[in-house]
Amino acid sequence: MKKILFISFGIVCFAVIAGLAIYFYPYVLYYRIIQGKYDGEYYKVKNIERYLNPNAKDLLVDRTQVLGDSDEENYWKTFHIGQYKLLLPLSHPLIGIFPIVNFKEDKKEVELGIKFMTYRGEKITEIALGPEERFAHKFNEQKLFAIPMIYRYLERVSIEDLWRDIFEKRIIHRYEEGISVIDCDKDKDKDKECSFFKKKKQKVKKVFGVVYDLLTLDFSEMIYNLYVIHMREKYFPGNFNDFFYYADKNYGVLISRGKDSYRNRVTFYSLGQGVVQSYAMELDLQDPLAHTVFKKMLQHTFYAPSTLEESQNIYREFVELPYKQKIDQEGMIYLFSAWTNDVENKEFLFEVIKFLEKGGNNFARLQPFYVYASKRYGNGDDANSERQEAQLKEKIKSEDLANIEQADRDNRNSVESVPTSAEERFRFYLKKANEVEKSEKPKAANEVILD
Image (tube, rainbow, N blue to C red; front, side, top):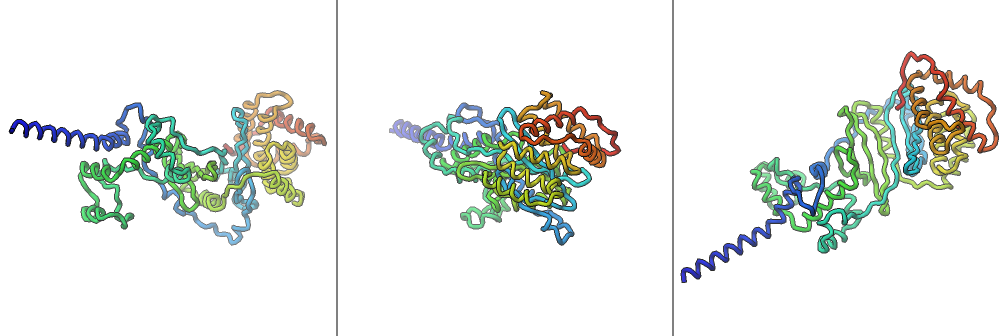
């Protein structure tokens, strides 16, 4: 009888231990994964600690010093550039604007943007408009998510919810600190456990913190957390430092820090009908003027698909400008805006170059159009476009603004007559781009860098 009882007791103990092992195994495995200690074939994410928790929301705290000019708002005007409407300083006494036009030959795409400069040639910031990209589930790249039961569960998650969660959701990971995931100051409506942690000042021993945090998760949430991490790895670029969700504008935000801790590149992402739109800005935390521009861009930048009708409307506004404004920064922005809504139209490119050629102080604004035209359509002398671009940049770096202005005036005084036909004008301006490469560089007392 005792032997039977002993055997029965052993069987019960074995069953209990086996049951507990089966019950706790997913939690132990989950813990090992988010600690970066799992090396199996079902789930692989490199540097997983980068994708666990959003951070750096304080970067968008308003530090802007208001400029002491009662007419400040009158200096800004909204323009339709590419797929966005931007508020730009059209006639600002402190800020000049320069176009960014880059042709990606491998993708046959045009990258657009605006560079903001002081009139002394100092860069304030820039905004670069990103391409549209499709956002969708990615199940097949991890064996874990190919399991039918898990696949069917994740398939029910909407794209909109997933999009927000990859920027906003915190993955439970406070074990090293020994602090519970529940934050009583923020989560006052949580369960009674919160009062316990509050009384203990939220400090618990590491082992209890691990057990508590894991046991508050159910299996489906663990799977979803791992899927969110996986999606972050697939969609976030490799050079980011922090990420978070900016609820005021429904933006996902990625931050890449420069060599100087106060210089950041901030990229904003928005989702509409399964398509991601993005734009990036540089932010100098020590520059009040940069904050002014950054704040205005953040508040007044909106997605707006480009259309041929919009291009024609903008061009009609340009035609009504006085001649002096047509050949200056204001005319350049109108034409640039019209062209970015119809980038395949060479005529707008001709018009931009033609009117900038006639104006003063326009060498730096002409340069990106020359280089783009050369890369996109070739040039009459078959010069190497990369060498030409390097020479153009070197020319800008080696000349001060006064010399550039004088060179522009001399150029306009000696320029040959411009052909009337579109194709002949196009070849004419491409030839001028090559002439810039070969021109002599005057000695400069100061260095102006437009990188």
